[in-house]
Image 1 (spheres, rainbow, N blue to C red):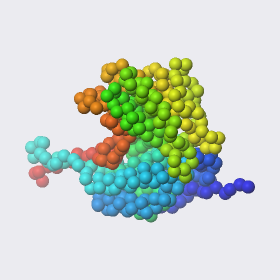
Image 2: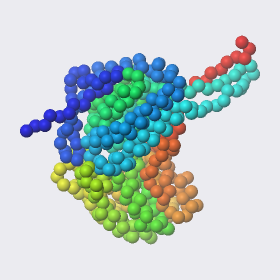
Image 3: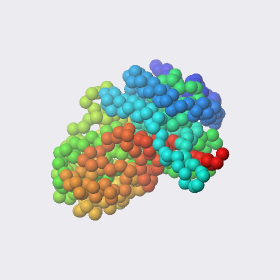
Image 4: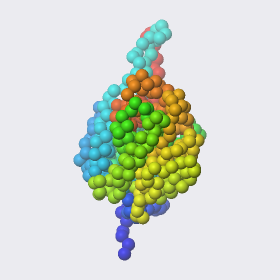
Length: 479
């Protein structure tokens, strides 16, 4: 007997709509491997409608005083708190994440981040007015950019949506947001919440696949395209946006080095690194999945990490003992499995290395040692619960290997030597360097990388400024 699937819909110009041509795609719960909903497979007509709505709403939203936009964002934050259990249920169905961890680790920071940007709306900074040429006064205006086309990923569907819409709306822009085709449920619920607070057209959601995202980025209306996703997706967006010189904001892949020196407290380091490596099934661009350990403590560290991995549990969302849930989709399961299947002969699987169960897309916490710098699993992003370990000789080699990848998003250093920590924080070519910790983020500090990890910042005042433009105004004093 078939079960009727729930119908998710686009949110355009203040109302929920099906795709104009009626096309849909099935949405699968990765914890069960079974479809639970359908979502619109949006095309050109849907993107046109959303962009037109956002463009029509922009002048009035732009012209609101910041205090009014702040009030709206604070109401959104309050509503997210009030409807937290609904959001959690939608996100768990999206992703298969543990219910308890979603409640404790995602809702509070999301609400805090919205409130941070609500405050940022009233704290635009710039140079004071001054006379830089005789008889003329200059000052700088910060203005919203316009319509923003935003594409969110599937690893943190709710939180990454917040990172995109909150600074954009706070700065006075309007938004057309596309969730991943595998995780649209929580975004559709967000649309219901946000749409009840902001004027119609200010916030729009268009569901669909890569082609839908391409149509959004290539559309003539948006002044900015923002994406969190793979390097390949980011390069495609940058290329498409270049055709009409849209501003682009890219948060892409990562391959975070975790540099462990010989003076580190090994048990504490293993505890922190395993949590930061396996949280969310390692599906995090900043995950602590590439460990470099000084050769003198390498064996001790690997043994302790393998033991920790063997004690970590993955499973269904309602199991309170699990640390992480499934990989997001069958393609991701295939990708992670492929890295392990293609390991070179010199590599050794110390723990895990296999799928868990035959229902859903679960993968065991895995540790791989014996690797070389040019091995595929060192150079490419796995995006799964796999931690690799390499032994380094000295500080110079640690820096060389840490920086020797095409990604540059995040990193960490584990040592009791303050001078060494400061040297490493300078030499590591990554947008974030944690010292004796890995993965905590706060709304007040910027998140974003270099090299093929993209450009632009999320969170912080810098992330807010990314959604503004600067205008010089000069006036004569003689009139």
